[in-house]
Image 1 (tube, helix red, strand yellow):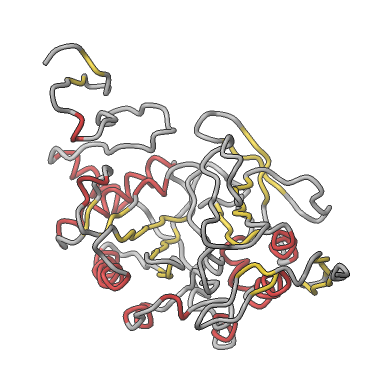
Image 2: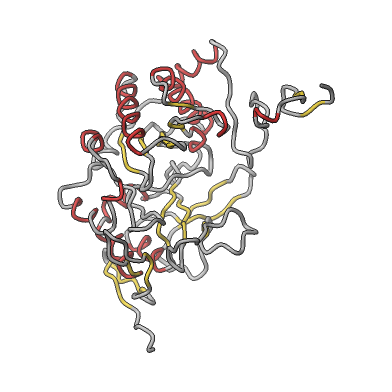
Length: 364
């Protein structure tokens, strides 16, 4: 069989070459047709305004699925996971075009890297040529990569809960944000969860933003018994987990208008609050349906109009500290942090003792 000729995709003022344009990335489902590599590239153009609002000037990691999405395909969990079909790209790939710009970021380990920093829609389209489906932007702009300008509230349904539960909790989160004088912008995760973003003034450290997320999650849990901030899965129960650690340095969430590697090519889709309240099946928002929404405007068009102070949430954090609610666990790849609880599952604490730094000590 003759090899399909490359296609050219108009992306702003540039033409981007897409090789193997007929390669099937998503197989057909009962509700959606198959999706080719060319269709992925064209999708990013069709949602370009919203996608660049999410990615513009931000260091961005790529989630690449060069062989497409199939049942049983895996995303690599680390640099030595060589058998996975998909992987994260945190550094600028070789062969990048000269119009692709980058910015240096620092990982929690202290190591640095040059990461893609999209400045025009041709960059995401070129990333599609490289097999990218999902973009993972940092919550910072390249002119100040150490001070986030977004608070990200990740409502993560645990086993036994549903997307509908996340939507209901999102409504409670909206009320709390409004009481704090903040405006949140919701989107579907593209899977079962809901994300809420708040633009903030870029004058606080990552640790401050994380503490704000913890404070918000704790207050939300106080108001709604279907919410938890418990880091250990065995303690979460059938509740919606507020994943506060998504606000750490080098922790990212799938961007608005990213595709997700699931059947039917679902999209992480920005919503109005009223619209979200009526959504029952997030799979309805996919590569085939989302471009038509852009004709009516992006629900997040005003997200950059106002940046809010984080102080109301930091004040709440300080009140929680005064009431005896301290630091929560960091991810396991982070160095041990001041005040952090022991990094041991509660069920494994039996017959063991741990000092204040989380180190096991002898005894019973």
